[in-house]
Image (cartoon, rainbow, N blue to C red; front, side, top):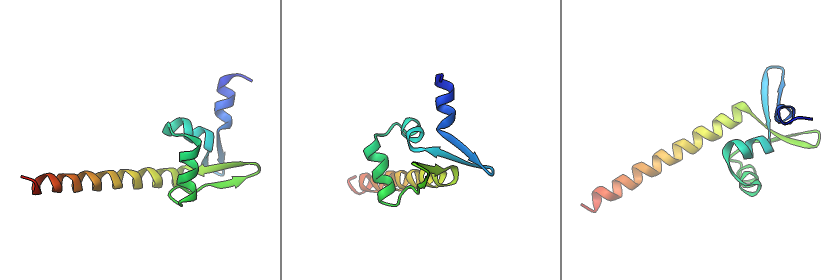
Length: 87
């Protein structure tokens, strides 16, 4: 099996729904297995077991990424408010 075939197996498409294996997400997001597991256990990222593997749908991945971006933008705004108060 060559490297491209292995990567193709990390993504499934079932009835038009794209599903990512957790190892694909670890590579894409550049996080550890423990970090990814923590996101799932805390309910921040929804995953589903199919057979012996866990997958995250493209929809749930986008929700997670948008939620993360929203938190960062709120944090940046909060930090900016603190800077103004200190002036």
